[in-house]
Image (tube, rainbow, N blue to C red; front, side, top):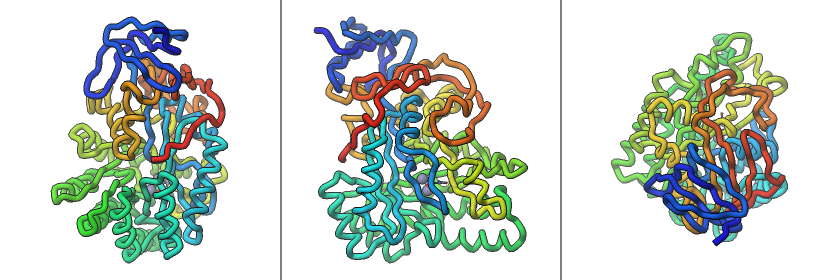
Amino acid sequence: MMFDTVIKGGTIFAPEKSFVGDIGVTGEKITEIKESGSLEGTYVIDASGKYVFPGFIDPHVHIHLPFMGTNAIDDHESATKAALVGGTTTIIEMICPGPEDEPANAFAEWKGLAEEGCCCDYTFHLAVVRFDDLAKEQLRGLVENEGVQSFKIFLAYKGALDMNDENLFQLMQLCKELGVTLTAHCENAEAIDSMQKKLLAEGKTGPEWHEPSRPRSVEADGVNHLCSFAELTKATIYIVHTSCGIAVDRAIEARGRGVDVTVEAVAPHLVLDKTYAERPNFEGAKFVMSPPLRDKQEHDALWRGLAIGAVSTIGTDHAPFNFKGQKDMGTEAFTLIPNGIPSIQERVDLIHTHGVCTGKIEMQTMVDVCSTNVAKQFNMYPRKGALALGSDADIVVYDPNFAGTFKHEDGLSKIDYSGFEGMERKGRSDVVLLRGKVVAEQGNFVGELGAGTYIAR
Ligand code: URP
Ligand code: ZN
Ligand code: ZN
């Protein structure tokens, strides 16, 4: 049989095992996988000496993001070209409406923008900020009719995106009823607000004060709080961008009490530490995100969590704000620096370089936490997240021997800096296929603009 495309002789990471073999693709699907086989195809990709992975999935991305008085700088085209070049073939974008916005309008707005520009496949977590009767009715409708399967809440950003306990408890009851996963930014909006005011009053205005305004205990408190409500409501929860060991511990303790909780890490927290945000001349602003970058020892806590399965996924929390014209809105007060450190393009290579090449995690763990576990957690498996018969032919041929450094000039995001500039880079997505079509080669986007599809879940 002649396949449309054959990926030949690579080390294939199939569910449960890896082996050298060939993959046959027909149309948009994987139609054959042969161990030490010899398939024939119209188009043949030589993968010898390389790894063959399922397309990576980023569970935490912001593209259209009106936030802190500005908008994230990427559009769906730039962000998803960057994603594909870095081996990410599906993203889950956070829909983040304001407190006055109706959820149904927000969903339509975000989906419309994604339909126009997304070059990779996409789906959404819907942030719930407004929670009156109309919003509740619309949330039900979006779950029933539009394939929305996960909501998002912020226990942070007082007065902008945060949610009070009355609404949180009711929302979690609704999540349980609808079978929806509640993803959550876990901090404590009130504590942060008080600490920010105190620091500013003391004249502590620079980006280096961002971390002290929301220390680890604030994050652990948010995790505890959410877990307590989950214990009572039996809602399924997913804690996004967990930055430190004690926050992971609080979640795992709750898991021991029967709480259905999953923990996400994001790339910046695994490789950057709080000294970056302490860089002089306001350069630290490039490294302001929430929860903040922590002490270096927290990297080990997170890697250990990943290695033992306490932390199940790695996303990016891609939230790009230019240094000039956006981050510098906060020169007078760190509380006005738009929060975010983008890494949609760099994620997989950062995890390969800092996790796999250092022996902190196995290659199989990288595949699981950056792809398979995300697909399973968010109801896309095995269509996504697996090299298996019948799965979408989202495939990454990965060159582990590529060696270089991370450079802003290689980035396809519109951001004006790289948080990883000059850092060592080991590995590169050599060829990336999205539903059977080659969309990226050796760091270049070669796909079709706007060819991404919405994954209703
Ligand atoms: O700093 C961050 N994380 N910015 C994006 C918004 C959020 O909290 O996820
Ligand atoms: Zn967040
Ligand atoms: Zn985020």
